[in-house]
Image (cartoon, rainbow, N blue to C red; front, top):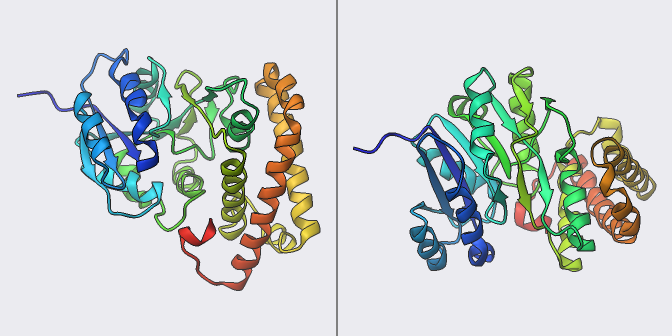
Length: 307
């Protein structure tokens, strides 16, 4: 009888990522990890390609629920897991060989949840570089180990009991569900959520300018609608165009500050690609204003309508 896995790796895969799923699974196959682990692919849109590719890598496939959110897919994978340790990665990401070993040790040593750097896989693509920066500036490769208030769902591991206690990822939003969830985890276990520098993955980022700008609108919308890292006053100011412009300017300063602090080698590219960054910030501000106004009205809006 095969040994039970010590880690369940959960990988949501939509139809749009079915063609590159083999890259993520190949990276998971060559992990330098001595213990048994399982890979669970959540087939979000019930794609035959996902089933075929997963079979080639001996990954277990579970059926999605037909929704279009990463939060829902991750929760389905967590419910199907056979291990008490859950590790999450996205279908367009590649885990470095020590990824599993890096997350496993701290979770055995009193950590409740851990995350790590998300590196840009397309360093010379202006759009992909800015896409990664705007989503993942706090997951820069030079960030030191230490407590974390929030972590990305694309590079995250947690004890199952803590996952269940916190209620899993929110399922009704398309952006920011990982921020909401990991912040709740860090409130419950403030000294046991950690950033681990050796827990590295690579992410290609979007290369289409239109896709990048649309995603930034979604990011801004979720930030304002669900008050992610915002005070009531900041959300109120965000309902106006000048207030949203001020918020975008602060984000611009934050991107430069974090790059100088943790990823100084990237600074020349940041300066060179700054026109695309400014376009992204403009799109973000448009979504942010809309989200702040909707949040103030108390209305509900589905994830699909935030696109």
